Length: 110
Length: 117
Image 1 (cartoon, rainbow over the protein chains, first blue to last red):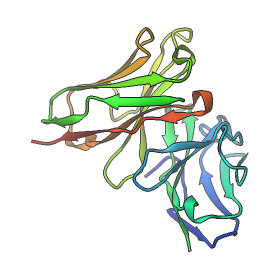
Image 2: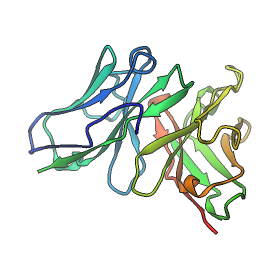
Image 3: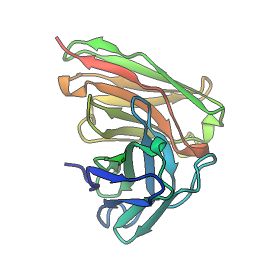
Image 4: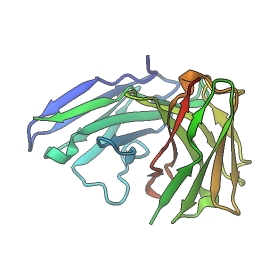
């Protein structure tokens, strides 16, 4: 059972906009930055969104992050087949004095 | 190019020890907080621990399952971070990644640790 809660799966058709949610508590998302990672099949994860909504250089602007209270979301617009991957949210947890990850969401492009 | 390269994984018996290394290049290593994250076969990501910079006291934090058994250290002269793993258990079997969110973020390719008799 992960500290951060994500839906196990999501799907969309090419060109569509999909969102992936990440729910936490006041001790993690409520008081710290949220990060999102993309893990393509068979590869290492990659930083997609840092500090709630900042895109590292090279990440397409189709990807965006937001946070409100104790929840966060990753939105992907103009969905493409190469977006098919596992997506993880993460945040520091003040109560645990450690970083926590969501269980991951497997995105399927239909 | 930002790069992290792990080494040191392998097969070890329960109760044994292993030291992983992660060599960094392409960014100012001395300014980066470095983390270890693991992924058991077919499972999600699990944070293992983190070490801050020398400026921040090289403070370390660990996940509850590894606290007291794993130790993270860094050698800024070698741009390398280490993960010393003692008293290994079968449930520690996973691919271990070193990672940083500094400078746009980077993850290594991972190194497989298998704990089995």
